[in-house]
Length: 196
Length: 196
Image (cartoon, rainbow over all chains, first blue to last red):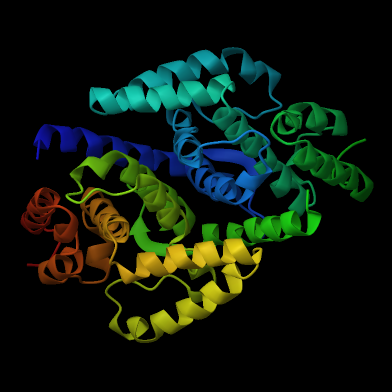
């Protein structure tokens, strides 16, 4: 066993513990507290295992799982940028690029490259795997909002139109899933969770 | 799209949000709070991606990831049983079996069966994938303890011997990793994190 290599791997594993303290805007469904990015990453990965059949293009589930497991690690340095925050979006890409460089760079070079490629693929949303992963990453907070009476939507005054535009990517992977999601959004308006 | 099937899938996805409120004995490395089982599941799955090369038998990483993503879901009903709790261990298997029946049973039958088989495989620790996953599930809290000055070990008066016995499974997947872990345990004793 090459000890230096294992040391680098464990250093990275210890470092990413910090993702458990990065808070998102979403709230847990039954609890009062906000969700963190580590538990979100777990949740959306399990979701991917289960909703795979709804993808219209064939996807390699293993690559989807790896992508979702690492997709938010950059937030350790860059923070979670709220998806409806237009100001934060301006320098999000640059902040996250620097974070990817530092954090993935803790690993042995071949693994740093592998994780960086997975993260770049996720961000580019071009491959079927990346489109599927990104669509579920949008669907998850929508479900959290719907099941908490729109708690985060209401706190930030989010409108039906914003949610429709932001989630339209779901239609790229599955027309059926998108019709279903649109139904949830319309019901959220009727229930008063979301501004018309 | 079969709507009833999607409803069952989403019902399960919403239900497992509760895993984020199941607390383990381990503490986060830099924070004061205890870790929950959802963020732990994420962390150990990422670890599996990175430490795969140390497995002496070839393992299918995709099955390892799926196993680790779902291995603690039963704790939603059964709670987290501390690994050094001899009394809790007595009825742990039965409590967890009932939990698996109820929670996986929320899914469409084919997916309930798939997750149940994965969980049974993990618990049985016979296949190379299950042995690898289970060994990392032991290694993770050891790293947390080591990097928090043995916080959870000290709280519960855990001894060097208990940790050696409990983590011996690591030797089943990799002699090199086990030698490394034994070094950490001996250093933890020297540092006073663990009772000799």
